Each structure stands twice: as structure tokens, then as C-alpha cells.
Image (cartoon, rainbow, N blue to C red; front, top):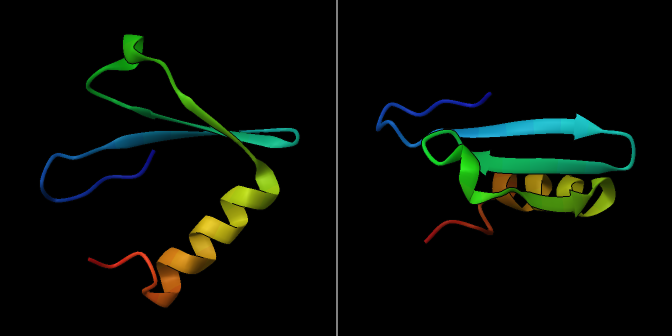
Length: 53
């Protein structure tokens, strides 16, 4: 689970071949499921600042 100081939390589940992400405050709302390779690309982009507003 990842946490932020603002109470905006997501839950990340690592499974073989894919990653699931969901809002901890709305667990019944479903999850975003992405292939592991695409998740890795997203994390690299976020770390590099390409996802900053």
C-alpha cells in the first residue's frame, strides 16, 4: 500500500504478469489492471517528472 500525507491512498497488488491498483477509500469501485511492463513504464515516467502537472 502506498500512502500520501493528504489521505489520498491507493492499494497496489502485484500479480504474475499484471498490476492491480485501486482506491483504498472505494474498494468496491473496482481496480485498474495493467500489464506489468506498462506499469513499469508508468513508474519510470512518474519518477522522471513526465507525469507532473
